[in-house]
Image 1 (tube, rainbow, N blue to C red):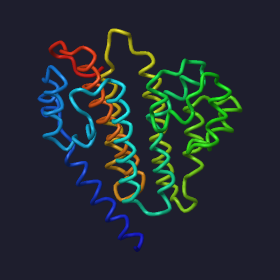
Image 2 (cartoon, rainbow, N blue to C red):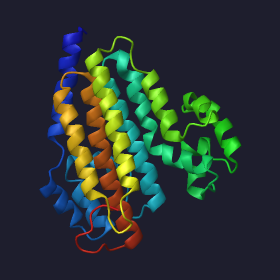
Image 3 (tube, one colour):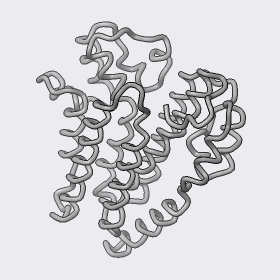
Length: 261
């Protein structure tokens, strides 16, 4: 496929999927649901249904989390299939983002929880001792992070280092700059979220993050950078659905007006 044709195909797919994303009115309708059953029914009437594939009203909170992570990997793999071949490894590296908090927990000496051992990805490196957890990465698709982690990088830094190494050599300077901007946007969001008071749910910061991703999506239209911005928006949707499900599973009935966990 010629480069221009490939870019046109990618942009057409991204615009079609982006146009299906729910607006705030639709989110308010979904989040008016007071329990898991009604929340699931509301989500399944929208394109967000891809995030709840496999979830049932009886799913435990850990099962919900596992399924949302698996559905995220499916969405990333679909996006990588749309992209020019040179970009696929970099895109596929994004599959592991939802697993990074568990890895950080374990490398920090956290206990192996029972649900971790049952997880198809996390179970491959879930070890009680951080050194054993780090060694176990060599047999997983997260192995490229191992040397950076062994040298003292934190999990996010190690993931980002591999991500940047996967940038295709043929990438234009403009596209590389847009991707670097996305990394800075994400890093800034993590720093801001760490400073949110315990009595706030961070909804405003997530809305700001979404707007920043949308600006890059529009500005980088027709390039691979638009796909990374699109995945950022998809990740926010997945996080919001996950919060809605887990909150309703743990609280059974949610207080009126509660949105994000």
